Image 1 (cartoon, rainbow, N blue to C red):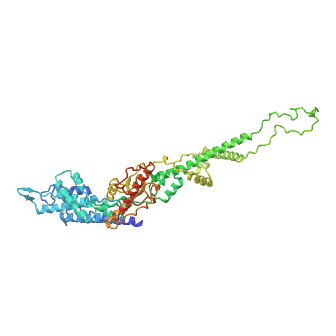
Image 2 (spheres, one colour; image 1 turned 180 degrees about the vertical axis):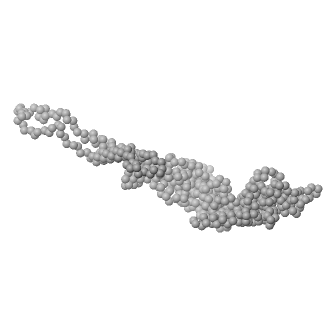
Length: 564
C-alpha cells in the first residue's frame, strides 16, 4: 500500500523537475500547453525561414534557445516525450496514451518537414511544377501514422481530418496510416494489448479468421458441464445454500426441474437475495408476531367469556317444590329444616384467570410509560439553576428544548429461540419465482457452434457468459475464461477437447429414452425380396422407433469427434 503511493509521487517529482521551464524544459517548449504545442506543430509556416512576421517569430522563439536551434529542440522534445510517456504508462493511475503518442508523431513529422525545407528551400520540382515544402503537412501525416500504428486503428486518419479541418492531405495521411498499421501489426500488438499483457490482466485474444483450426473446434469442446443452477420448486434453504457456496456467480440459470433441465430463464444474484430478505426479513417476522398476538388476544377473550361469573339476580328453584311426595306426607317446614347460612350476594371470590400474568404485564407497561412521559414533561419545563455562571464573552445561545418521543405502541419481536425456530420453518417453504425478475431469454448457443463464431459473438455483443442448450435442455455454460483459455491453447498448439459426456447419464432427451437396450448398429434395410404383405407398426411402436433413430444419430455424432 505504501509503495502504491510512493511510486507515483517519485515519478511525478522526477518528471516535473525534468520539464521545469527554466531547466531542461526550455529545450522542449515546456511552458506551452498541449493545445498550444499542437497548434504550433501544425502551423503553416517554415520555422527555418528568413521572412517571418511578428507572430511567426513568437512561435519560433518557443523552439529555439541561445544554445540550440529548432532541430535540436525538436529532437529533445521527441526523446523526452517518448521516455516520460513510457514511464507514466506504468503508473497505477488512469492515464491516456493516445494524445502523447499523437504529439510525438506530430513532432517527428515536423522535424522531417523542417529538414526537407532546409534541403529543398525552393521546393521540389516535378516537370514544370514546383511543390513547396509545408512542414505542417508533414506534422499531420506523422501524427496520424504514429498514433495509428500504436493503436492498430485506421480511424486516426478521420480524427486528424477533424482536428485540422481540411482534406488537402487526405491521400498522404491514409497511405501513411495503412503502411504504419501493416508494419506495426506484424511486429507487436497494440499499445493497449501490450499494457494488458504486461500487467497480466485477463483479455480475449483475437483469432485469425482464415485459420481452419478455429472452425473445427466447437463450443461443446470447451464448455463447462458441471452447472450451478436453480429449479422450480426449490426451497429457500437450497437457494440460500447455493448463494453461500457460489459467491462469485452473479446470475443463475433457472430450469424446469433437475430431471428435464429445460431452460426457463436466468435470475440475477441480487434478485435471489431480495427474495430471501423479503421472506426472512424483519418486516415479515414482525407480521408473524402481530398475527400470533392477534390469535392470542382472541383466545384470551374467548376464555374470558367462558369464565364470566353468573348474574346475582338469577332465580334458582328450591329442591322438592317442583314435585310432591309420592307417599302424601307433608313437606317439611322450612323453619324446621336446618340449613346452612348463605353468603351475601355482595361477596364473591375473585376469578383466577390463567392470563393474569399478561394483564399484569400490560398494566405494568402502561404505568411505566406514564412515569417516563411525566419525567420528560418535567424536564422540558426545567431551566438553568445557575444563570450567573454563564460566560459573558459570547452572545447567549437560545434554549432549544429537546423532545424525546416514545413509540405509540410497544414493538414486540421474537426471542432468539423463537426466531431461529421460525426461520428454520420458513426455509423449508418453496420459492415463488414470480415475485422476482427473470430474464426469459438469456443468450444461448447450440453445441455445434464453432469457436470462431463464439469469439465474434462475445466480442461484438460484449457477452460475459452464454448458456449451451440442446433442444431447450441446458447442457453447459461457456464464459470468457473458458473462451480465452481455449484460444490461447489452440494458438499454442496444445488444445485438448473436453471429454464427451457419459451416454447413460447425460443425454439429449430424458434418461428413459436413452437406455442400453437399443442395439449399437442401425437396423438393416429391408431386402429387395420383401413379402407383399408388410406389417404396419402400431401407434405404440412408432415413438420408440423415432427415439432410436434420434439416439443413434447422436451416438454417431459423438463418435466422429476427434482431437484437434
